[in-house]
Length: 335
Ligand SMILES: *Cc1c(COP(=O)(O)O)cnc(C)c1O
Image 1 (cartoon, rainbow, N blue to C red):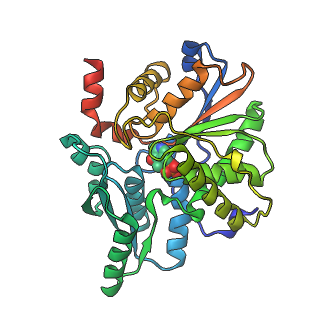
Image 2 (cartoon, protein in one colour):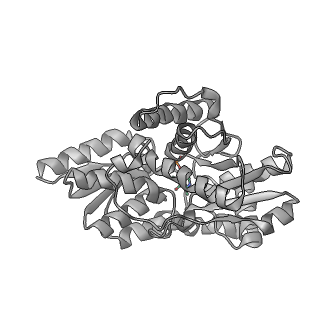
């Protein structure tokens, strides 16, 4: 396995820290809780998409693209990071935003990630919920090609095999950090949406012959559908890496019990988790992904799913900019 074979641009600050969560562990009477700070990648308030974009934008540059195209929900962290990457690389950028959350308050449409997208100077196209996003993106790409532009299309969440290599690289980083800090066989917990993060982690762990468990906490799709999607993508990542050993389906776990009413819709357990992390660690999580992921982690700790000597790492995938699109959800909770 050699990540050097793939074109790549440097967009982030590496390695991101791996740190103990002493305050949270103390509050929960839990032993060994750690956090991988991928919220601190440095690009435009940080987050997981920085890792994926290093490979995706690397490929875009190799192809001589002049424009990055992608799509996401209105409060997409992926669109915000892509917009910043384009600004940094001197590329144009356009994104299609899907109204995936119904009856959202004004802040959801104007603040948080949307405010930042606009600051980075990208062109936004808003479409109703349920739009066939990949087809809409391809149509936009076609239109730009007819105008003589050279768009590079990045799928939602940056989640294809190439983008997922970013999380193979994260496993390499974690392997060095765990060795230096004396963590053995850590159990990784993180939020899973468009599947690239978990596919990259699981593929990287498999490629390196490690036996680290990974628990994805779903934010959108039901368990079976999400696990199939992650496994399919992880297999494609392993193909890209030239790893032929089959990946057992059981290596992919995506718990769907913390989604609540749907993608981007606040839950009580998310509000509790975001608040608890803020007050015990001084770390910001987000309402759509890491808050629900943390709610899953809290439940696992509270129901004794980890042994007292097991090292648990929450992979913080970023997203705090999204908090500002959810002012009313938190205001209600603290009133
Ligand atoms: C995109 C995102 C995720 C989910 O990662 P996927 O690779 O899409 O599964 C998790 N957390 C945050 C903050 C994200 O922006």
